[in-house]
Image 1: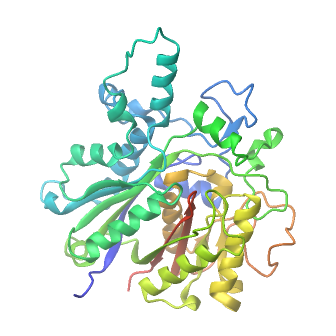
Image 2: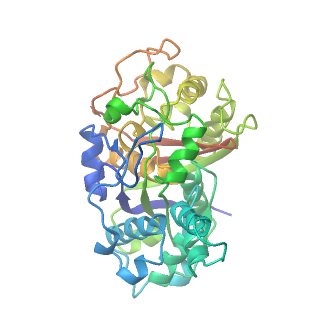
Image 3: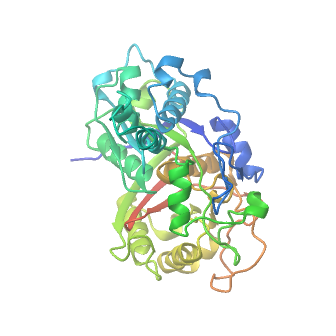
Length: 416
């Protein structure tokens, strides 16, 4: 069968550097850092005392107070980003066939704060199991797309993909295939995460995964820099409306980009560490290019996973050099996590939005906070350091990798 073409017609972003798609983009191209001391809880005894929290965000400005109280933050974030993307796409919510509209969402952890609070409440009691009746519905990772579909009456496929930090890229690939194969006309996809909590910070600190650069939080996320010492935890959501091309064209929709293809692979190596030569990353990018029918020299820009960890950044850049050869030196490579921090299950979605907007505006956002060259990184690679760079971007790739060896890659191109 002939696969249907899939395009992006709506975007929504709720991030540590901007609470809308447009604010997010302005934050990116200006090189804004979202990192700051944590305000959600007392960090006195924590190794890491900072994160990339949302700024000036109150859920009840967007969601009915009673309904918001029945949602964990990760679902609240999903609702706000999805609302923006749906409005941006200008979908006819009365005329559209809602049986053919799906919601496929990504979340690496789900309702961590809800789980944490309920367990702490029980531990501090007399042993009587007095749990909130909304405990389970607030916590489970699949509830965000469930709430989106309930609000809008979308009755197509509805589920969450969970593959750690690759979750929302997995969701986008599933959404792409649902439309390609003719199962849906439209899919609301993306991801959300809200792990800046006592349990989240404490757990990642115990793994030695987080930066402990407490004296200069704003510059702590420094992908590719020789002095990087771990990632900075972020929170928020990104949403994209994927739509079958003819369906979008028929209604005169604005088309941001075409979803050219995607790829998946596994490191099959270690629970948390990447393969030192990036073998799984090499394979996922090759799979993505093949799925999209593209050649390595077609790629203009790659938003890397680039978490600012000592091992991960080097392995990914080795993999890029392996796959793209001499052309790798002509690609604008960046890591927007230098600004947003690492949004875990939402990372793939907001980074996909970044590459789509880079294509629209012909500007590649920078990798900020770079001061010291890492001798393990090829100096001829263009890592878009510290300042946005103007260039025409016709084809762009976004990489996301997760604990467990999960690798996902999505590629977008200008519509033709």
